[in-house]
Structure formats: C-alpha cells, structure tokens
Length: 105
Image (cartoon, rainbow, N blue to C red; front, side, top):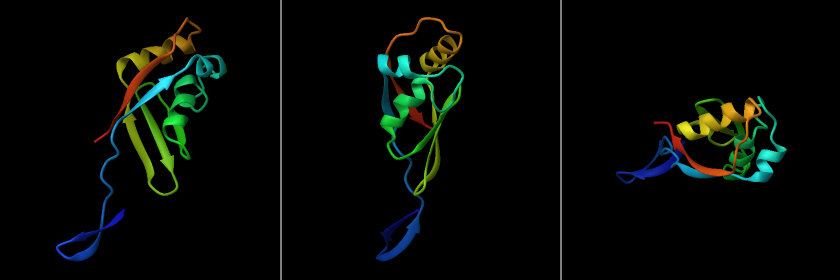
C-alpha cells in the first residue's frame, strides 16, 4: 500500500501493478541451475537478478516473487519459458534466452 495525495488529502491506495520486465537466462544459470527445483532452476536464478532482494519461486506457468515490503506478486511465463523448464527438467539440451515475465493482473 502506498500513501498518495487524492483530492488534497493523503490517503492509502493499493500499489499500482509492477510492470513486466525482461529476464535473461545465461549459460551460468543453466550450468548452476538444479532440475526440478523451483527456487534454484536456471529461470529462478535469472529471476533473482531481475527481482533483487526478493524470494523467487518458479512454476511451470508462473513466477511468484515475494518481498517483505510488497508481499507476493505473480508473473505469467510465456510458452517458451515453460518449454525451457520442461526440457531442462528432463535433462534435454537448452540454450540461454531472454523472455518477459508478464505481470498478472
């Protein structure tokens, strides 16, 4: 919640949704990531750089980002990121890539 001036008075208002942002999975993320580990997979490692000072959990369709000030936020994963997770978890070859985590409305 944020404090904002509305009609000349200071009022509490919900935070505006955080915008979507790009997440880059590097070769180092792939090399250091753990299969079937929602907080240490390559996408989680990359997301932790994009959302510093937050806890990150990655599922097959979304990223949940939690911090002490703002609580939890959900970001949808594009299909390419979901396929990456499936391939990585099945020990199939994957390559570095960038995707955009889409803020859940």
